[in-house]
Structures are given as C-alpha cells and as structure tokens.
Image 1 (cartoon, helix red, strand yellow):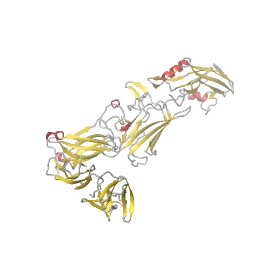
Image 2 (cartoon, helix red, strand yellow):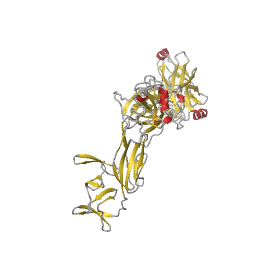
Image 3 (cartoon, rainbow, N blue to C red):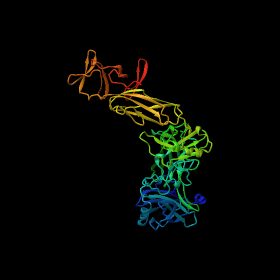
Image 4 (cartoon, helix red, strand yellow):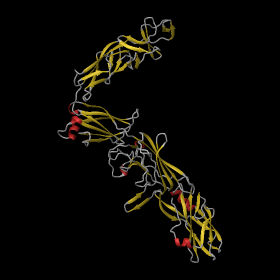
Length: 605
C-alpha cells in the first residue's frame, strides 16, 4: 500500500493554467484528489473543471489504474497499470470543452473486473489499493491537468498493519521479516539464545522464547540495558505510538512517530534489504528508567505499539510485547568440597528469578575469569517460581585452568543470570574442615508416627568440607534420614548423631524420647466444671494425666481431668498451652520474654 500523489510538479503550469480541477464532494476542494473508500464493486466520482479565461478550453481524457505488485507475499512498492487489462477506467466523455468563464464536469468510473479480482484474491486476499490519476491533456498547448484517486479493493480494516513476529516456535507466519524485541547492544532478538553466545547473524539465533524476554540495569558487557522493538509494517501509518506499561497498566514511558512508511523488501547488489520502521538514534528505548529518570521496579512490563492508518477510513491496530525487568543478581549457597581423591569437586547451588546463564571463577574479585561455563538451555521454573541450578566443578579442572602455582584459597565465584546480572562470592577450593557441630535441638519428645527435622550448624562458618552422616542408636525407636528428618517408630529413647564424614570425632547428638501411640480418641464433648474445662467421653469417662488430640489440636489434662493452660512440663520437656487449652508452637511471648517452641512437637527449644 502506497501513498500516492499527482506525480512530478509543474510549478509553472500550476500557476499559469487558465483551468483548474476539483473533485465534487471532496473534503478539501482546493486539493483535487478523490478518496474512494473501500469495496470490490468499483467507484464513481466527478471532476469539475473551471475556466477562468475568456477562451474556451478543450481537453482529452486518459489515466491509469494502478495496483502494487506482490512478490512472495510482500508488496514491492512497484505497480502494474491494470487499465484495460483487469480494471475498466471509463469517462462520461472522451474529451471535454470548458466554456470561457464557466465550468464543465466529467464523471469517472473505476470498475475492477474478473481478471483483477482473481489476481487480488490470490496475492492479496485481505485487500490491496487501486490508485492512479485521471489526466486532462490540453488540445491548445495549455498545461495538462492531473487528478489523483485512490480506493481500497477489499475491506479497509482487514489487512494487517504489522507483519508477524520473529519465530516464537508457534508456527506464526510473517510476510517480509519478523518483528522482534531486541537488545540494542547486540542487535539480537530477546529470548533467542543464552546471552553469552555470540552469533554473527540473526538467523543463527533460532527461536525467540517470549518467556525469556528480560531487561536489566547490569553493567556487564552487552547486557540488555537498552531494549527496543524492530517493527516491520505492511501498511503505512499516520501515527505510531509506543507505550511501555507497568504491571498495573500505568504508562512509564512513551514515544510517538508520525507519517511512518511501510517497510520494504528491496533486492540490490548486497542481497535483500529489509527495513524496519524505527530510525537509528530515535528508537523507542526501554532502559529501566521512567521518563523522569527514576529507576523502575523489577517486574513484568508490556510494550504496546499502536498504529493509526491513513484514510480512506482510519483504523487502529496494535502489536504488543511482554517482558520482565530483572535487576537482582543470582544467589549462591551451599558452597563446599565434595568427593574424595581424584573425584573431589567444588559444588554450589544457585537460585534466581531468571534462568541461570553462566558461572565462572577468577583469582581476584575484580579479575578476569580463568574459567567460564554457560548453560545452553534455560531450564524450567520450579514450583517456588524460581530457577535452581546445582553445579559440581572438578577440583582438577580448577587447578588446570587457574594455572600452576595459583592460590585457590581465595577464588571469586561469579554467576550470571539471563539478564546478565552478576552475583559474586569469595570461595576457597582449598579444603577447610569443620572443627565442631551443633544440633538445633538436644531433646525432643515425640509420639509414635510423628517426625521432627534436626539441622546441624558447624564451625568455622567458612568450612567447605561439610558432608555429614546421620545415625540412630536404636532404629526400633527412631530413624533418621540423610537430611536429618527423625521419624518416631516405637516407644523408648534413642540418640540421633550427626558426624563429619571425614572426622567421626567431630559430632553432635540429640536424645529422642518416643511415647507410645495415643489410643484412638473416643467421641465426647467439652464440659465446664467448678475448676475449669474437662472432656467427657460418651461412656461417661474422661481423660486424666494425659495428652489428647481433639479436633486437630493437642490438649493436656491434670490428674483430676481438668484442661491445663500455660506452661506444662511433661516427661522432662516444657510445652505451652494457650488460654483455649490448645498446645502452641513457634514463637510465644510469656512473662515479658519470647520463647520458641518446635513447630513439629511443640517442645520448648
């Protein structure tokens, strides 16, 4: 689709012609052009010629009926004249004489025929322009006159303003070249590959995954700190508005361009040239700041590109992009040396809101990486909404890559996410053993079937040889998993021990007291007596000197059968019961002090 004028301007003729044309009913009579609207049955319009001289003037009529050529589903900006070959361009008279100091009118009819309809349906099924000009050639040497016209064959609102998007794996088809949201620093579409991969050509990037569209404010080389759309348009637009919206739909940055031409596909010596509509240096950039220069918060954002088309009847269409601003660096944890002999490795865990892109090591905090490894696949987001990676780096690899004689006790571990935010942590690849272990609890009372999780802490905190083994002195009473989860099996006492796998003398232990299973509760109702609340079974009996689970909460009763509240000591452990009688857990404020009760057993820690 093209913007059509009247051709080369004859300034002398325009200012000396004794006759001037106008289109009857035109919005602006001083501009002789015919806007015909849309449809497929053809159009009719009238041209009025006004003679301001004292001599009659005669003109012969002619003209063109052009439509833009289509090649490989794209408009080429070149046209074919279909007049007499598929479009009838007819006039109410072949010549017209305009009397002196008077006017005359000519009716023009543009009628698409079967040959053009067949071509348009096959090559431009959503419609195409028919445009051209009616020419009035003077028979007495006066300047010739031209009246342009334009109509749309089809329905004006059907054709897409925007071409399709760069391949997103959904099979969406584009005509000329896929629009994309790109990192300006690299020119590559967002989400197309690991940001540390280097491509010489955009076609090597492959699929552009919308879930991996990230912007950041990272200072790393070629980080996506400035992103912008590269938009390909099939139709020109009167205005093109770019609006960046935050999660609640508020505009944080906007740009407007006017009189935007359609993209083109031109073949020259260098091959095919595809032109996106944004101009270099004037791109509608998102850089993590609002229009006032304030930092924007992390989170989801949307770019809405809205195009308002030209006449005959203006229409609006949108192209949208969703992306995420992420400025937080990955978090590293559980750094330790694992394995024995030649199998020793430095292992660590990484977690981040965005996929983990790469990790590396340097000898100093600000030094260059002597080792860097990238992850080709982004991986999947876990149920907690985060991305997790576990990494094992053979110690032999670190020694080889760092170089002979390098000090591995003060390495700097670097981790990057997809937006190229970098996390840095000092680590040591020289073994640092634990000297002591401490358990989170020293005594726990459980009922058969209950569990409690014990955690072990060590000194020194910088120790990196931290593998431990768990054991139980009596697995008929309690068992323990490799993660410290203790399960009560039978009544009695057992000692749970955690020890350094390489130094058995470095250990800690806790006593687990397991009570016999509580009999299945009998149905009953609460009663209030002179001394408080008690629980009456259906058979008239009641619990006494016992702990009982009623409706999911644990209650304790004294020897007389009354419900106990406040602090209660039971088999050597302290418990706290609320005013309702229910056993508490977690933090409790009592007597101007805070106490912590095990979430699993309710025992005061």
